[in-house]
Length: 499
Image 1 (cartoon, rainbow, N blue to C red):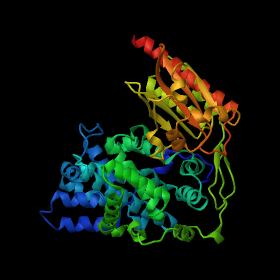
Image 2 (cartoon, rainbow, N blue to C red):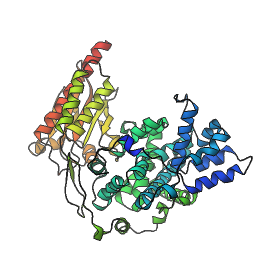
Image 3 (tube, helix red, strand yellow):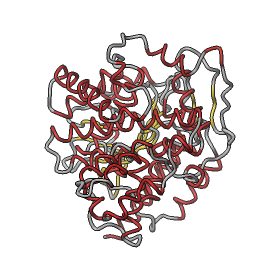
Image 4 (cartoon, helix red, strand yellow):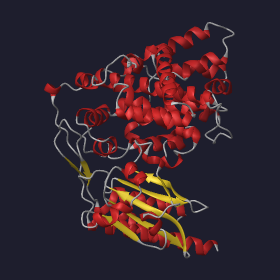
């Protein structure tokens, strides 16, 4: 499949996820035990994403395709609902990893499963600490969070390998690399798969940045982020930042949390050594700075490959420092979304309007990150509600602006108005931006517009180009404003109808 070809959900689900030989053997052994408890089946299932997905599919078939009245809290419960005959057939109806995948595809799949299980184990461990009512549900959600990557290693290994090359060898930011290699974010494809496969609700929520402040979702997202980062070592500034967020999530000290997480990584490695990939726990003794040696093993400098970028993106040549990718505007996409919003004024639900607006900003106007932040009921802060381009950044996903002190955003919220911070006015306005927001966005150019409905403030649109090397020009700003204004018209029309 060419790197410039569009990738669809059908493309990445053409072949099912395989199961590990270890899972098949485990089920064979349980079949010989006439009184094997359901819990043992559940333990095997939760270490193998292909088997977990097959279990959920069979549950859906058993219910004649109807939505489940309540979520399955554990794979032990799922096994009981299916019954012994169906449970014992689960691994027999799936291809096996060692037979269906070869070379780079098998290595990538095994590596992705190892990472997924590490995330799942950490999330499950934290759920116990927080006295969650269903820790196995949290485990399953973290295990299935990266379903899109797993399906890509099975059905489009060159595309996902290109993504790894862009992020690891070329040091490109994950969000931009995903749009170059795949045409959209991994979370976008993950959401499509979650819908198609009717995955548990917590999986859906963990794939949407607007739920990132929910405690259970936050545990899953932080575990996934940690597992991605420590694949190359435990002692980077990014891992330290994530560990600090985990400590906050658990209400514990940083040193205590770090030790606990390290021990959990070792336990996770012991639980699922059969995945066949390097486990993060093996990197705990690795000194800082050794990450590049591991990356060079996967992408030898002498085997340099040419990366092609699909239409709609600018890409610089591979280099040692971080590669900057600036999304190009796509006028046809922008016009299509604008027309949909215009036609939907008065009929589109407010949530749909807001999602279309930020998609238009990102996909059409070429803004790397866009969001709508809603004003709290007590008017003390703005909290991100809908976001795009931020899937790989749980820190940014907590976008929140306090309004208890005067600054640029409190002024914006006083009346309907917009602003673009750029080279020509930065000296005048940059000092009005709160330090917390500067640290959060890590760029010095952005655009924002306040939203008022019936004379009352309700929220704020924000967008930027992520990198200071990408120009936020006047034309892009005007496209941003057009979409904001259409969203406001639609929200006002909907409010009038409800009144």
